Amino acid sequence: MTFSTKRVTAIFVKDFKDMSRNMFVSATLVLPLLMAIIYSRTGTLSIDMIYLIINMTFSFVGAFIQSSLIAEEKEKNTLRGLMLSPASTLEIFFGKSLLSLIVTLVLTAGSILLLGYSPANVPVISVALVLSAVFYVGLGTLIGLITKSVMEASVAILPAVGVFTFGSLLTLLFDKYPFLKVAEYLPNLQLIELASAVERGESWGEGWPKLLVIFAWIVAVYLVTTYVYKKRRMDD
Image (cartoon, rainbow, N blue to C red; front, side, top):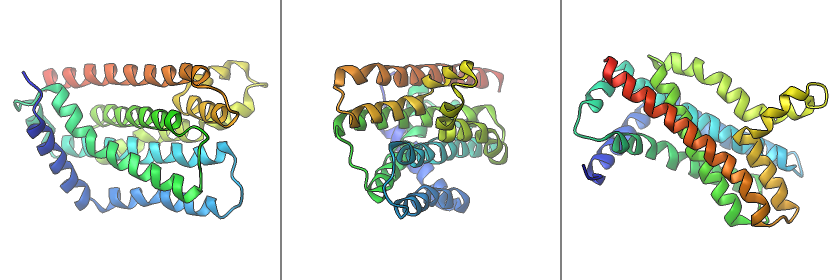
């Protein structure tokens, strides 16, 4: 079966209409920008503070909005129809993720502009941000698939929002609780470490291992998501 852009576009347009009608989701989109405006008025911001807002955008928009869109499809029993349509798994995943990915990247760019953040190496940071956005959208898809309603998804996403937004605070506990150092490999912490390395003038060669870790998270989350999706399709 060939990849159909028409099917992907149809799914994208439907999601756009659903998001436009959902006031709760639309209101959530404003939160990262409001936080960026507030933080931008506090003076000079550290990399950790800048990426707190960026990771918040990823969590609230990329993961939360995506999980809500998927869960809403399940709640309305329309996801089942999509599963039984001629669209392939790749087309469905791509179509259902495209809107959230675009909105996430646009709001991330908006937050960066409001924060006045200008990375020393734009190409490297741009690649890292796009990879991170892809991961969070995948995470949102997974949570949407394992929950049955928008309300349930809103609750299930909270631990992920906490870990991936405020996970950098765990670094303060590394000396007291050495076992927490495994958190260094969380994608949000890898992103912060990469950004810090860029500001120190480190080369692309020193930064690619962090990009590789983020990419590994992408592969892992989409493998699990594909498994859950196919299992749900067979169970239903």
